[in-house]
Length: 71
Image (tube, one colour):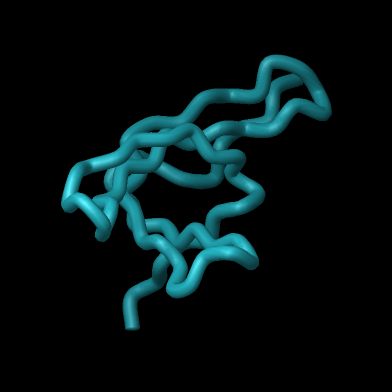
C-alpha cells in the first residue's frame, strides 16, 4: 500500500524550520508517492531565493509543509 500525497501541483505551501525566519512560501510543482510503508512522501517545491533572486527547486518531505489557505 502506498501513501498518497496530500498536495497537488499548483498549490502554495509554507515551509519553515527553526532556523528560518520568515518561513518560505513556495509553489508545488510535483509530488512523489512513498515507495514503501513508512517512507515519506516528497513534494517538489519551487521558490525564489531572496539573496540572489534565483528560483530554487527542492524535494521536501510533505510532513514539513503546510498548505497556504485563502484568507
